[in-house]
Length: 320
Image 1 (tube, rainbow, N blue to C red):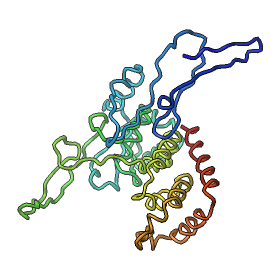
Image 2 (cartoon, rainbow, N blue to C red; image 1 turned 90 degrees about the vertical axis):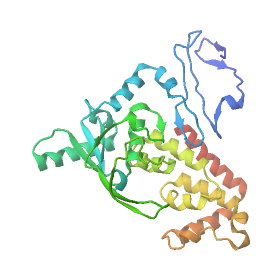
Image 3 (cartoon, helix red, strand yellow; image 1 turned 120 degrees about the vertical axis):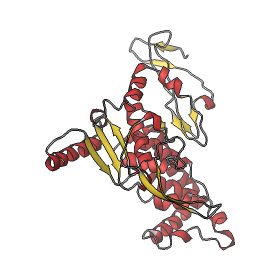
Image 4 (cartoon, rainbow, N blue to C red; image 1 turned 180 degrees about the vertical axis):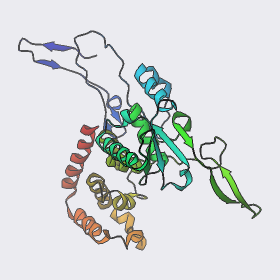
C-alpha cells in the first residue's frame, strides 16, 4: 500500500510503483485507485468476471463470496415463483418453444428495457384485458444471447456459456424435428426433444463478443457495450479483420478504425499471391466505401495512425 503525505491545503502526493503485469489485463490498463484514511481496506476488491470458454477459467464461488447481494441476485434469476415476465424467441428456431423468465423491476432499470416492457404491457392489456404474467416476443436476438445479457443485468458478470440451471425457463410444446443418422442414412421422424435437457444432442452455442456487443448497444447497457468493444478490438487478426470491418465496423466506429489500422499494417501479407481479402464482400453495399477507406488509411503516416488508434484504445479503457 502506498503512503500519502497530506499537506495543510488538503493536497497530497502519492508515490507508488506497481509492476506492469499487476496493473494490466490483456493489452489494457485495468486497476483500482482507492483513497482511504484507514490503515487497512474495509473490503476486498475483485476484478469483474469475464468468462471466455476458450481462454478463461473462472471460479464463480469467489464472486458469490464477494457479498450476499450477488448470491441473492443469482437466486432470483433462477426463481420460478417470483418471476413475472416471459421472453419468447420467435427468430431462434431451435428454442422457439422455450420461455426465459425474469423480473420487470430488475430489467426496468435500463430505459430501453423499461420502454419495451411498458409497450408490451399496454399491448397485452388491450389484447387480453388482463395483465397477469407478461409475455414479450424477441425477434432480433437468440435465447442464448439474451440470457447472457440478462445474467449480466442481474449479476454484473459476463458469462458467455449458457448454464440453463441458472435461469428460470418454461417449456411450451416440444419442438418436432427430423434427424438423419449419418452412419445408417436412416431418417428418424417426429423426434421430440428439449433444448434444455442435459442429455440433449442440441446444445446452446457460446455467445460471441460480437453478439453481446449488438444486444448491449440495442438495450443501452453502456458498460457492457464498452467491454465488448474492447474485446472485439483486441480480437482483430488476419482471419477476421475484414469480417469485423463489414459486420461490426459499419455500426461501431471504434471497431472500424482499429480494423482499418490493422489492415493498413498487414495489407501486403493479406494481398500476396493474388489474394483478395474483400472477395466475400464484393456485393456488400459498403464494399466500395470500405476499400476507399482502407486505401486512405494506408496513405496516412504510421505515426498519425498510431496516435489516432491510441486515442481510440484509451477511450475504451476510460469507459471500462
